[in-house]
Image (tube, rainbow, N blue to C red; front, side):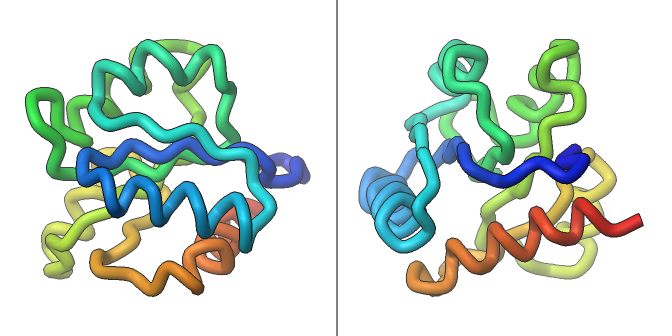
Length: 132
């Protein structure tokens, strides 16, 4: 959890190349964040330790190892047990959002989202993590 830390490093796991690029561009250029992107779960699991993100944006629907499986794998690793993870999904029904939160997601970003508002959205997620 943040514990007063500043949000500076965001990792994004998204299999759709255009959306992955949009996330990277808007978060770096508009948000001023350092961003690492991954096209699938295995590459994220392999690369996250070297990047050390403050927050992870994780697509739910990934080929092979889906978002919930990636989250479970991260939670099993002590260095990522408390990493804030926000799922990104087009599955926005209340029951699905509740399920994602029950899995340990700190929030859910519904696709399609406004790229111009993404940086503000992640800052809002971060701010909510600070609340008691």
